[in-house]
Length: 455
Image (cartoon, rainbow, N blue to C red; front, side, top):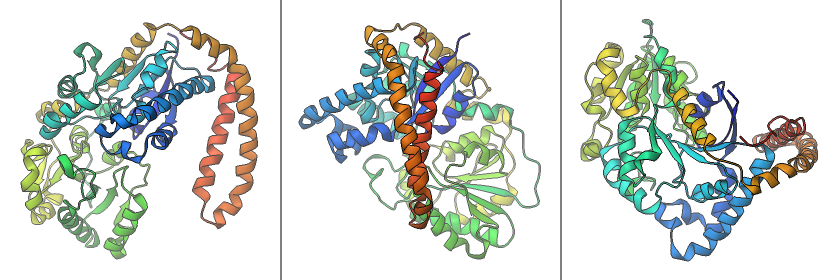
């Protein structure tokens, strides 16, 4: 079978993309969401990123049109850089991709959403689905989802049922072969921390409120006290959208002498799946990773208590209603401390139905099913005259890209020593990496790699 060339938008989508990249039938090229988002914000203003409604404002009609025209050109540039047969998005509700399917269709290329979202709370099912239906209905050609519950959400949001296929989640394939951990003298605890306004339903979400501060602080006190006493080791995993540096400084101060010994923060690019697999106990609040940890046969503690929790619990993911053999609910700091050493690994047979209702089948073959759907979709589309014109210009484009990339590499390599002195190392390294990637893409095209005819 021929290789399917995939262009994938990388928006907090790393784990699923890793699963797709490892598949023998795919050649995946990622491109960062910032490549589109920055231009969209410049054209339409910062408010467009604050809620689905803002993108559709009447006064932005002209700006939307200008951005759509730019995006159409950018899709052509992406094809010139490296040919692709299908574009994969983690969602098409983002304001900066709303017109991307139309731009791809001009080339005869389909767009698929490999939906990255998994668990759905009651509030999300009832209210957010209605908002999506009104403000950002599905515009792509296919959506793969992890579970029947996810499918229900998108049907409520107005997506035609024939465009939704339940496949399971590629990133969860790793758990199909997970084994229970052997007993360790000190439990290795993974704490999945969270922003203080995370998971707050409705208007509180993303508004900078400090709703969960008492709960988070109390949870950390228990974990770090036990770590300092030598009862456990704690690894804290920040959410990708948290400020990793600020959180690391805050936690280092709280941990005191246990910092970087019994307490540490995982790297900002650490794979949560690997952290789960390397832990004895996973402690968290409102995160899909708790379902994942049960699927991986790890001991799981849901740390949730207090006035704020009681006020909002009916609208949150119902981990407090999970079978006790799957998730232990610590409803106080004292119970959390006791459970860290006393809870038992979940029973795979008893918990399978519970976690698969939320995150879908975990059998190791979700990636295969997604790839099959992408193959079928891509094979049903044909190249347009516009795409054929692009093919004729790919060599000259590659020559120009190679020249620009080589020049940029020289500049940014020379700037590296000075950048280290003035604290600009990361920025310069990023520019240097982009130049290197451009050189590699251009070289591959000129060698005939990735520059063949459209499927």
